[in-house]
Image 1: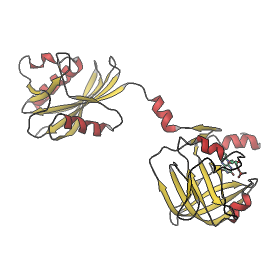
Image 2: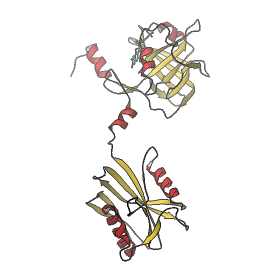
Image 3: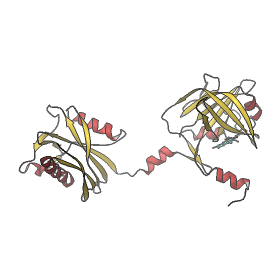
Length: 305
Ligand SMILES: Cc1cc2nc3c(=O)[nH]c(=O)nc-3n(C[C@H](O)[C@H](O)[C@H](O)COP(=O)(O)O)c2cc1C
């Protein structure tokens, strides 16, 4: 156990990640005031209450304690500069930021992830800090990822998660069957392939929908038929069994399984997938393949009536 040395305690308090906010209000003479705070906590939904802790050493201590309300601005990942401005002795912290008065009157900063405009509910004396408890009168939130703070450093979880994501691609393909035939398209090298699309910014299901739309057929994705890691091409592959309405495809053609029809399928992993599909279609027993492009297992899914 560590003894209660304030520095060690500060370090321990700071060892979990918090968000970063700028707490704002108006001084009695009307000018905006604010400080960076990571002590923000939601308290109650009914009534809607939140709190922040203000150091008694703050140059704005008296003004905040006397304020009729205050605002909490949850900073976005891109707003490290604003956090620094409101944590340092800058003469006019609002000079370099765009802000407006909220419905309840507190200064609200532009570009934040969320804001809460509060009436002062109560102040609670708490050691070297004062707890400012606010009743939320108005708020707004958006999808901007919030800035984090842990162990004395800023953390940008969304940006860092993106950077950590392995650079392997994710590809979805559509296995569209009609009357014992499957839709195959030109692979650009004289062979055939399943219609496929790289997953970029959209979700997997949105990408499959786009892919189906691209075939010119109306339809939707059914169950996942195969999931495999294509180590050679450094990508994950998810193949969806799709149902489509009648119609002529915009690209490619429906190819039957008989004879050497599948010989032109260039990717051996897709060829294996199609051969399995041919066998399972004949039997009416479908499974889902999970593995890599060479080895994996087929897990039973359902039996066709
Ligand atoms: C990430 C971060 C979080 C902070 N959290 C708080 C807090 O919750 N309460 C507080 O009083 N000060 C907090 N501070 C320190 C104040 O922002 C800082 O002391 C500021 O200079 C106070 O300014 P003032 O004296 O003008 O009020 C934090 C600073 C940083 C960088």
